[in-house]
Length: 170
Image 1: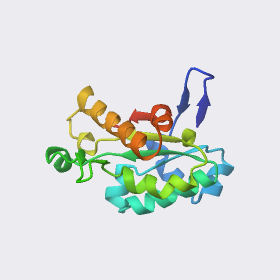
Image 2: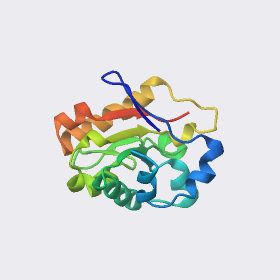
Image 3: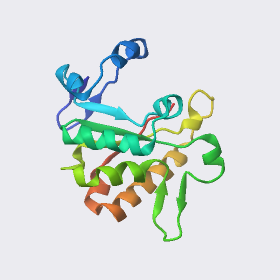
């Protein structure tokens, strides 16, 4: 469900846990659009780690959804071992920021994006799901800042400042 609250906020309410089985039976973007879906959540950790969806597949799904005028909430996040190894945000040899999951997804979508207004990036630290470990605000801010920096360097400063980046974890 999508709720527009004017200039104050947009609210997207995904299906509750009890209805996920029913929602999973709806296959295809056309059917989702038929029932009024305006946004899709892609890259959720459960689909990555249980079903095995990878960045390339998620990127293709994101590009297709955006080409069909459906907004994308793209989940990014790291496992505990990646967090502990310092791989949440790292600098490569050419100093471009690498954020787990982000580059492959958006490099595939960049040419297909008519506007970044229909993209929300949700930082979902997988290591915090069901573990009782809750990230401190500084950890989420570190990722949010790195995402904005990556967007600024690889897309544009305007996109970096306008793109919604949310915390989607526990």
